[in-house]
Image (cartoon, rainbow, N blue to C red; front, side):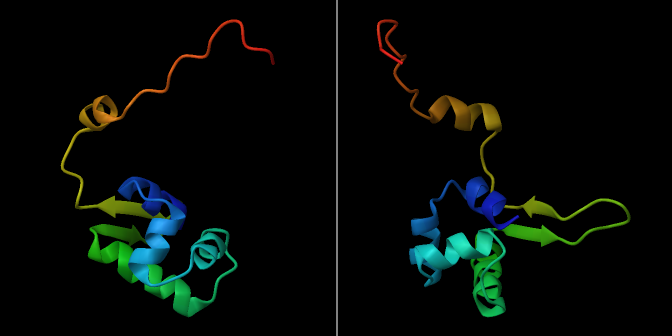
Length: 93
C-alpha cells in the first residue's frame, strides 16, 4: 500500500525519502515490509499531508487508499505524460 500511495503521487522512492526525511533505502524497506514502525508512521504522515488516506479493511475486503488531492482525470494525466519513442524494427534482441 505504501508503494501504491507513492505511485498515486507520481513520486520516486528517492523523492519520497527526501520529502519525508527518510533515506531512499528506508522507503524501499518500508514498501517491502522490512522497516521499523517509526519509519512507517513517518511515511503515513507524509502521505496524509499530501491527501492520501489509508483505509483499514472492512469485512472481507483488504486495505484501501482514499485520495483527496487528485485534480485531473486519468485521461488528462495520461495525455500529459510524454510517450516513449517507438522501438526500431531492426534492433537486435
